[in-house]
Image 1: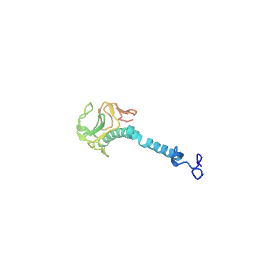
Image 2: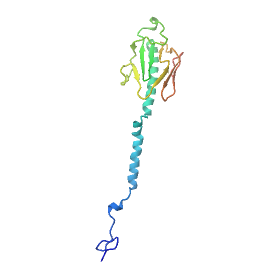
Image 3: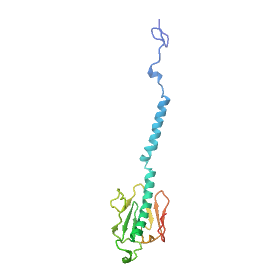
Length: 177
């Protein structure tokens, strides 16, 4: 006697093998995979695409802090302080002489060679009087200016950090906003 379809030779029903029974994924497996993909998208993808918003905001704040520090140092030490901006760094220098012995240096150049030591030097810069940027760039008009011992700026300065609103240094007061 020949067994019918779905029965074995003893006449018992055959159960389908595991290979034919598992044709898809369980709901738990699908949710786990989607959860892993979501975690990778949130934490890993921004690093690969270069969109590090926190780093860019940190650099913007570094620019504002460096300008404020130069102004406050000029007032506290009663010296002329010079700020020189390039596309990726800010250099700060100060006049070692009191203002009475220095002709007013206001103009386009920065005659001071004494480096203004930052309270927390930027490890990514070669000099201790520089602030360096990696993710953003700076544009400024003018690119070199001074603060006098009263905290006034030599000119009205507009500093643009890529991707952020411009930073303005008022000429008469030196106020940075």
